[in-house]
Amino acid sequence: MLYIIVATVCGTSGIFLLKHANTTFDAPKLAFMFIGTSIACIFWAIKGFENGIFHKTKGVNLALLIYLLACITSMVFSFNWVISFFGGYKQHGGVLSLLIYLAFFYLSANFINTRNIKIVFRSLIIFSIFVCIYGILPFVNIATYDYLPMYGRVYSTLGQPVYFGCFLAMMIPVVLFEIVRTKKLYLYGVLLLLIFCIFIAKARSGLIATLLVSIPLLFVYRSNRNFKIIALSVIAAMLIAGAFITSEMLNGINLYERFTRPVDYSPRLELYTTSLKAGFTFPILGIGQDIIRPHNIFLGHFAKLGIIGLISFCYLVYCAVKSFLQINKAGNHNLFYTLLAVCLVYLIFRQFNPAYIPVTLLFSMFGGAIYGIKNSSNHCM
Image 1 (cartoon, rainbow, N blue to C red):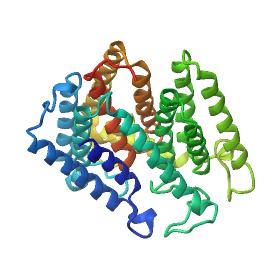
Image 2: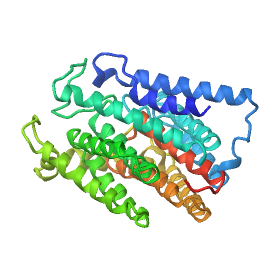
Image 3: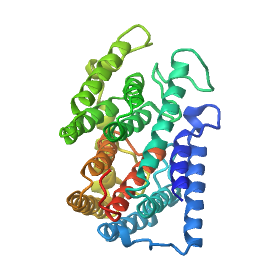
């Protein structure tokens, strides 16, 4: 079962079947996620849902149920229930996708634990290397694919540079944890590769999330004798990547210039204003899932699900934080902070961008894994 879970995450992020990727890229991803999750659930059902379904996630079950009911109610009364159920173009943030994410969350909570999470980490690291190389090859004109880099930015198999950057930023805490745990030298090269690709993707949200989460994560490992080496390697990786990016190998603006150049924020502000108007016009249930896509997770819930949806989401966040604190008290501190860092990267990313299939599925897996580890042995990796 564990291998089906990992294969579904990697396959959804890495599948590349259709031409003109920036327009039809998401259909195979959505299909792969649905098929992989369905197969895992069928096998689990055949085994009689061993270990139960909801036992390991007691602290968050009620909050998830309330949130799901809020989404379904909003869908029923939305402007377009078809879009609210199936999701709209690109993000596919409808109720159907939510059901898949929830199923994947419970699968991960029941089948990922302290004994096998190293398999998950190693598999994701290997896959992230593939994703990085796939993005770099056309960037340096070694290979060409059926898609073109977007404005001098790369997005590999993730369909859009910001999602590529989010995926990479979510992998950095995993690599840091494995460096501390295994002390393997090749992982320093993987770390450099991930950071370098964040730069060539010119992903501002990915870099911000890395700085806000992964760098402070080093201080969790400060008691480890390799802390200084790890910290220096991260700093060196940033400097080396920055040196490459400010060289002449980039077409167009570099990541530094994306932060410093004058930016017209009027489209984003107009989107925020429209979302607020939608929320205040339909304050109880909102206008429905995926009808509007403000680039902020809280504003999005207010506009799409109304006050009920926003409160249910905030309650869900509260229950999750409460459960996380209980896990931290139980031990496995390094592993706990690593998984929490991955989830925080996603939440920081969602303050500036809408949801997307591969990174949301990855978030669902790590969120479920936290509960699986909470209920497994207190063995510290």
